[in-house]
Image (tube, rainbow, N blue to C red; front, top):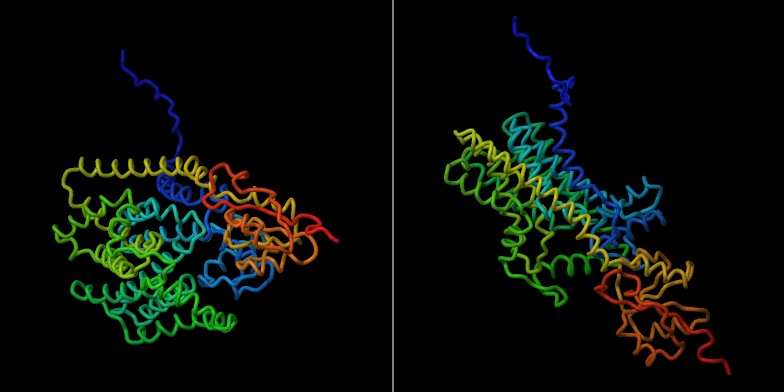
Length: 516
């Protein structure tokens, strides 16, 4: 009796085209990246002064139609930053029906983070290095500080994107200089255009990141390959940057009678670099080395190990992508280390280039391994780290961020204030600055710092409403004689955690002092 084959058992994947499976597998990393940047983006309130200022500036642009001058809800000019990020938020808000929400405020930053990842991927993919491209993209997307800041309404990740576009285009232009002249000029035009956008995001510090990195890379690269910077591009670059950035800076300075240059350029640029302002803390020159090591986790050990391997194996001399990534990131860290005032966020423009170095070196290291089991273990280890990052970010979004938000919550307190003083009543903010509270209160607002000004405002007929730190409540009763203030509510009664800066809401008592 002949033996016949048993019928094949049905499987869950029966009938699925292998091409569909390959498409699913190839799409999975990008789904993972999109979730990291965008999941729950609008589910939490604004949690920092930077976010609230961005929301106020953008909403004010949409409400008034004035997109040039930056003005907060209390009518004060905001002179700390150029308008680039606020324009982006206002544009998204316009698409959202003219309303700036938490999601709207953060979207430009998260989108810039995703575009940074795509830029890193396309840079290496264009050189026909798919493994390096995928590794570099995932490393950047999962570097903890990069992902965390990309999920907040800060300018640092959009700045990182503009700087990365500028330097990548500069790299391509110098490499294309030995080919058609039009190709090199086109790349250098894109580089200058991106540099101009970077200046509109951060100011001249953007050029301090781009210029030294480009020059050092170009000088060192001539030892290993044929690169050239055409004279026409040297002239074109500054002209394009100036045409993009300078009109707004000069217009804003004229609109504020010179105050913008004094506040932004002197206090927020020169004083931060030199440490001459007593209001800004200074940090040692080595601060950014351990800071980067912590914030680039979980990939710092891999970066160090792959750099050491590249140098020892001589791969450094053969791989232009490794050289480009390492030189640019190291020059940026060195430039930023020269400044007295330092913040971890300032390092973010170096992250895409560190990721490029990791991806390119990792691909070369994998190719050099003769034992297939080593390659398999490396791939599994990489996947394990990505899985751990996903778990870590789930814990961050579901547990850590809500606890942090509890201490910074201002919406409930703002609602209580407006319940007693609905618009168009003006809320007086005395000797305090809480951009978060101002955002939730909405206008009209007015900020006061002098006792005489408070006394004069309270003397006017009608009810008045004041928010101030609790340490000034007693002094107000002793100094202000025109009207009596009575306490209505305290911030800590409307937050789930102890607020970092307590506040008290007061209103004028009716008929005080009594009429004769």
